[in-house]
Amino acid sequence: MHPDTKYWRHLASFAYASYLDYGDGVVQIKEWSAQPFSPVNLEEHFKYIPCDFETDNMPLEAAGMVAEYDPEKEVILIIEDLKGQKLCLQLSAEKLGCTPLEAYKALHGKFVPGQVYQLIKPIDGVQTGYYVYEREEKAMLVFCLMGMDDEGDACRTDKTIKVHLDFKDYFVGTEMKITAE
Image 1 (cartoon, rainbow, N blue to C red):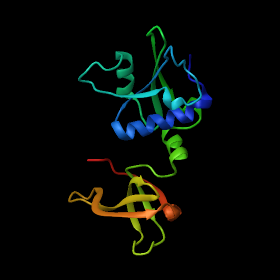
Image 2 (cartoon, rainbow, N blue to C red; image 1 turned 135 degrees about the vertical axis):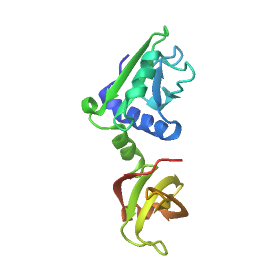
Image 3 (cartoon, one colour; image 1 turned 30 degrees about the horizontal axis):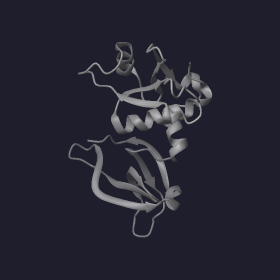
Image 4 (cartoon, rainbow, N blue to C red; image 1 turned 45 degrees about the vertical axis):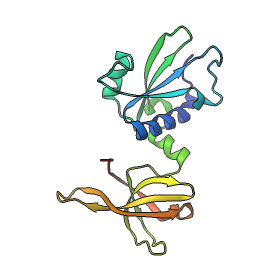
């Protein structure tokens, strides 16, 4: 059993979405005797294991890889067969065609939590400016207004806006990112 490049986008998107939810970690693909590994419905085979250096929740080799990887460009994968043998791989976009971040954007739309977007056209009472994308709620995109803290660093403000998905093209991505606090 080995990863196939044509399924990379699904694996990479899953890994990045899990990273956004749980932080650094590895994707485990485990073969079960009742349900052998199959490229159909890949998400049924994926399990995300957040890295916890305080506990021994993953092989030492994988923990070492996690300490050095860039989750926007790489995926750490543990493949476990029916005999319990594990293979740890560090997969990179250089060899597989797109980054986990690009795969996530392709499958979930162009918006990534924590990314700063510029609103270029007013929407009803919402003025143009810079907004941090938070999440999607059904047909609504949730943003908060970007501001500056006392040190002059970009930060989230308390002003939250919700706009319908129909207005997504009014937002243009920037290179800025604001991490969760």
